[in-house]
Image (cartoon, rainbow, N blue to C red; front, side, top):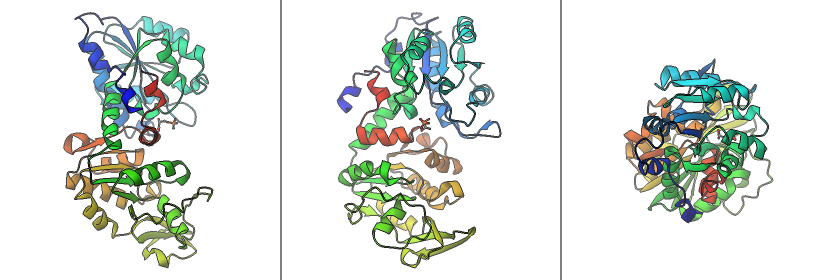
Amino acid sequence: MLENNSKIVGIEEFVKGQELGNLASKTFLIRADFNVPIENGIVVEDLRMRSVLPTVNLLREVGAKIILISHIETKDGSGMEVVAKHFNDNLGLSVKYVDEVIGEAVNSAVSELEDGEVLLLQNLRVNEGEKNNDENFAKELAGLADFYVNDAFAVSHRKHASVVGIPKFLKHFAGMQLMKEIKSLTEAINPPHPFVFILGGAKFDTKLPLIKKYLDKADSVVLGGALVNDVFKARGFNVGKSLVSDGATDISDIISNPKLIIVDDVIVHDADDVAKVTVKKISEVADNDVVADAGPSFGDVLRSIVSDAKFVLWNGPLGNYESGFTDQTILCAKILMECGVRGAIGGGDTVAAVKSLGLDDLDQKSNLFVSTGGGAMIDFLVNETLPGIEALE
Ligand code: 3PG
């Protein structure tokens, strides 16, 4: 719970409390989340990589040795070498890379590290001990270093060896980004009012607890993405061939809540031709239509709600982002910027929308905190802590 987060020691606090020279030559194992999108061998979105730089640089400045560990979800498990290259070529951080997670090659690369140097290990998930939270695997990783730092908020909802196992064996700290995430998202749990919650994406079954919680806490809950299709369906409208949940989750008790904001015009495409796009009232949707985004009234409705708000929390795209229906998601990012409202945003596509506006340094240009978490952000907002945070207590 929230009170307990104060038991966590941040790496900055720890470093500041040390005598000069104390941490020189000490080895820090930093759990990061470099699960970043890679296209044609190139990292296309690097927020998560940039977010770990303050912690890495802080430790380099005191002469520590750094081992970075992370997972990456690619079909064949490869990709971490691309991450290493991106650090070296684009982020001004010189990173050595070893293509193993544990074993001889790792041990010798660690023993060759000079003070201030950084080593990145292969994708943790190539070893099945990672997802199984295998104690021996955690112990072996812990044996590489003197201290452990979790700066991987985005994976802290997973009870994996590198998240909850290693801190059992090493003195542990929260990284600077993790501390920022906890602070900013804790505020989103008890924010100033009027408070607007915007939630997109799909899967009512996983998001219903969050929606219920925020129908209590927020003054308005703006729904977008495929979640809206479920509400329209439950309200008795034909949603044609739109993406809907499997119907196993009963949402009847929320669909008439007056705090729920859903516009009644939609962008649809023909199920057989994604390029055949029209604007319709929800009551006009035909059997072969697919609802792909909110309609043009969305912007005005959102602007009027957000312009009075004192805090906005936003997670998830508002249309079918992956198929190119990005308009309302991008408009939402624009409106939040223009209104200058304070808040927090997260989720991969949400961040991509922000980036498409050339706003990847949004947290400096606006009053919005950009979370590195997708699922982790949602879990934190529901449970007010995460397994990876509890492991640091
Ligand atoms: C994410 O992308 O949300 C994190 O990296 C966690 O990835 P996972 O959902 O594969 O555990």
